[in-house]
Image 1 (cartoon, rainbow, N blue to C red):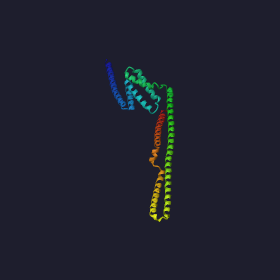
Image 2 (image 1 turned 135 degrees about the vertical axis):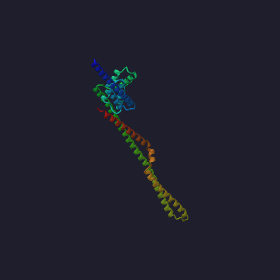
Image 3 (image 1 turned 90 degrees about the vertical axis):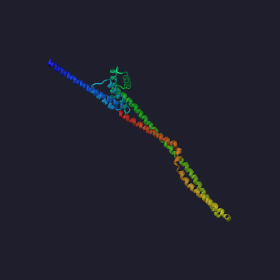
Image 4 (image 1 turned 45 degrees about the horizontal axis):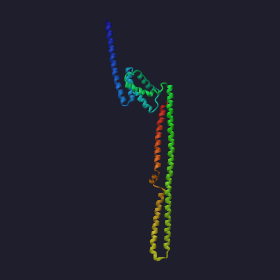
Length: 288
């Protein structure tokens, strides 16, 4: 009888210790779960998922509350992954497995959570569960990406050809402007040269004139022609260089539509190259 009482006492003590240990584990698990929720709400999805895994390890199992939050985290992380590459078969299959388990075992827990889980499941239902079928699905996605990458490359090539053609037109336009000013300058210079020659001719005639009574009047006329010739020469010297080099204001006013079109084309090329780089990196990271 005494031995029986001892055994009962020991058994009760063990049960008490186990109960205390379970209570302690549950308390720690609860704290970890709360930390996981806080990390999820603050956008620290990797941290939150690790804490949830710690909770499952502490409890030795999962439950509807833990698994639902885990599905939300896994789906969010996978969506982020999809912005940089095609997710791996393992990553997709893990989420899909958790979703199927939740729907099968916790369908009566919460209608709202079940509806949300089934909404998430719609995307994963399109992903094959068999690796061989997944590989076919993956190859199809890669073909789409590669074809789109080729389209971007073709668009860049087309835009570069267009930009080069605009530059050639602009160059011809600028040369035409320069030629017009050059011809105008040469014409005005010829006029100035002719004026100078005429002034010299009349000067000689005035000097050789026998009409001494008009000498004063001839001197005035001679001086007037000399001044006129000097001004004409100065204007010619100024105008000819201007004709050779039209001002930037004149150039820009006549060619602004071409320069604007070239600038827009270069922006398009830069933007397309950015897309090409992003797609190339996405394809590189997605390769199995």
